[in-house]
Length: 159
Image 1 (cartoon, rainbow, N blue to C red):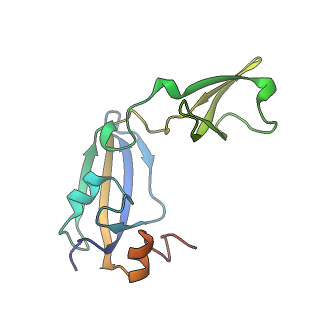
Image 2 (tube, one colour):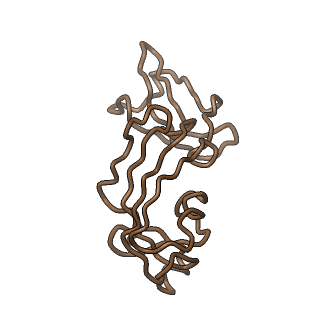
Image 3 (tube, rainbow, N blue to C red):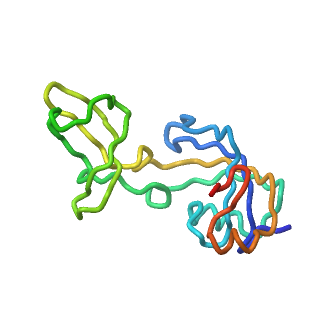
């Protein structure tokens, strides 16, 4: 079966920094996504896989704007340690508000004296990435998966 709109695609993948070649994610579990513009993976990955079949392998380079976006310095925050919830450590995440007042997740970057430094950027924002992909399965998506806009079951979304 060819990868086309409304197919469930199973991939084995590795993600590396395209500049340093440092491995960022070995993809210990397969990735399963609903193909066809459902925002379940990056558009350039979907475009590269369109029409391919099980067994297809590719290495796809994504610029920051095609992956997790450019770093946004406006998403850096410094808050007083007195406003910081107890028990959260460097690397932990907190929900806060962005400049538009929308809920946003921030990662604790540093705790320095009376201040806590937070970063609302995705950890891979600003990075060019290299995805090594192998298609390990392609099947027709169920009507329910199409209606819900994501794959269900093993390695997919569970309700």
